Length: 321
Image 1: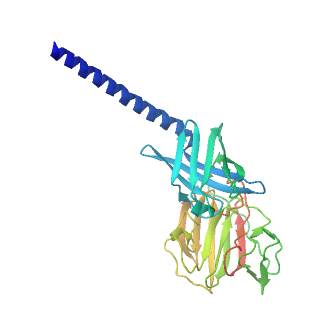
Image 2: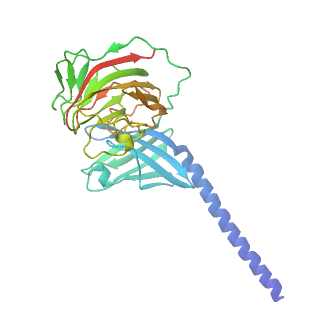
């Protein structure tokens, strides 16, 4: 009789444990299923009271754990220390050190239809709204047919270009060459482009930094930084995403060339005739982008807000027809 009681007790315990495991597994499966619509890349727009800032988020699941890569208003793509999804609410945190503020930047949002909507706070504590749309694939069904090359810089003045802020130090044209102001305005083409081939020549002064933003969103780096950053932040890299390989020798004070082909998200970059990035996908926008509307055409912009002086000449673009 006692043996039967013991067997009965063991059976009950096994049943309880089985039910608990089943409940946990079901909860885990339900959680995984509920987060699935959020996985992938998102183009974000942060709406401050006086300005809209582009941003970018990639969510993935690894071993049942939610992971995030993030591009803030500036800087490079980086992993976030905290991202959670619970009861339909997404929370992710960008550390204060990365945001140059006294407190962490906490984003809270949810999926509304096909759009992410949420709130965060600005550096002064004011509430900011933000939205996210799924980043487009930008895949092309056939190779492009190219039009005729067009000179974007006439060697005389800034016709066809405008500054990001006319109150900041401006670009100059000296002896047929464009010269960046250093800690000044960005220089933005009036024309916008979708798929294109770009040729330009640049001369990066000692200790200087600039870049070429394709469609105003993806920066191809130009630098002679005293303290070089990571591989994708070196000359020839797509900032924060793609490193040049092989990286070319540093040549401050000398003229060099870029030949860049951008079709959808696929980029090929040759520096001084050497291919350093070959048909690689650009995952998302660079910090400092003009907007995050990746499906739309965008301008070229030359970075003038960084240190030192970088010169440009022979800027020629060939559009895809």
